Amino acid sequence: MPDNTPATETLTQLRAGKLAGTRHLHITGGLTTFPHEILSLADTLEILDLSGNALTELPADFDRLHRLRILFLSFNAFDHIPDVLGRCPALTMLGMKANVIERVSEASLAPTLQWLTLTDNRIAALPAKIGDCSGLRKLLLAGNRLTALPDTLTQCRQIELMRLSANRFEVLPRWLPDLPRLTWLAVAGNPVFAAQEAAGRANDVPVHADWDHLTVKEKLGEGASGVIYRGEWAMASSAAPQPVAIKLFKGAVTSDGLPQNEMAACIAGSGHASLIPVHARIDNHPDDAQGLVMALIDPDLRNLADPPSFASCTRDVYAPEQRLTLAAALRVARGIADAARHLHARGIMHGDLYAHNILYADDGRAYLGDFGAASFYPAAEQAYERIEVRAFGLLLEELMALARDERLAALDAFIAVEALQRQCASEHRDRRPSFAEIVTVLDDVGTSLSARR
Image (cartoon, rainbow, N blue to C red):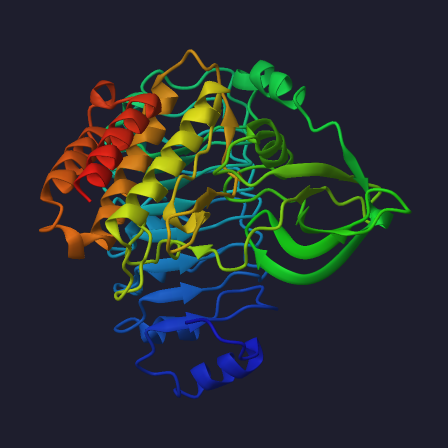
């Protein structure tokens, strides 16, 4: 994994031959040209991270790194994706976030790519050749200048996660909801749904919290869009302070989209038992940071899973020993399904319905958080709900795996839930149920299980 070794020290070791056999190399800070000594690692190097430098080009023989699977070039100064990357025979993951990329040529995209991150650049168009990346599973394009996508992307039938937020789409591709495995989609901050976003912001919380009435304590957690702290809020100068959570947004484009869109969706979606209540919007921060005052959740609650790894790509990672009782698994599933039903009834797609965004307790209490990828859409367009249902189907599969120790004792319940899970995860969008229908089925299973006990 990346370490904190200074770039100069790493280069010295590399030039002295002390890094022979290295599989993972991380050099950040100060590079303006590519160190050719890296090519001496061609027979072993699999992961290369050169983020946080000032690189503008790669050598023409960069493809000598024939074992390279993962390449990070984020926070550099590339104005294009070098064509040599299209010739790297083993490249599956490319991250070039926050450069100044304007050009993506036909030759620059390796057909072996599974994970492509081009967030926060200046890209106005993608080449038709991207359709040759038939194994592509994650495509992150938030914060660019796109108005359309090439129709050849319909050939990429493995795509599961797509981030299109903060671009210039007046319309979305008609084929987008028909991608058979599309599961996590973010489209906020585009003209196409501007009216829905404006209507959503009209539901802003009426209460505003002055920064001077807030006391910030220890950090509770951090995500791509912001940092959450434990805090106290004195609603008036004479009021006793109340314990709260304070989320301060970073203000930059994230892989999911823009913080202001997250705030609007979080506020508009509030009001369900499985969503963290929003108390107020923060005013008068000394650095003009945006933020929310939210309910402080029971500290015993924890994340249901870890985010996807390089190896799992789109699927969350669970501890091998992790288990839930069947009753708790069903309670989590029912709570999250009903929260999603609530959101979609308001024309809000969460966009990141994942176990790692769920806080839970062993008894099945659960909260769905992190609205960084949330989008407003016309509630009548059911295709977007059906995309999110597929995400729930994968979550349901994982929850039942956590309860597998009870399978023989409650076989009927497992059979019923597994049938529902297959419907939700179907690659045929129109065969997936609505969240209202999912809640009904889970209620029936829960009632039947309680009656037997």
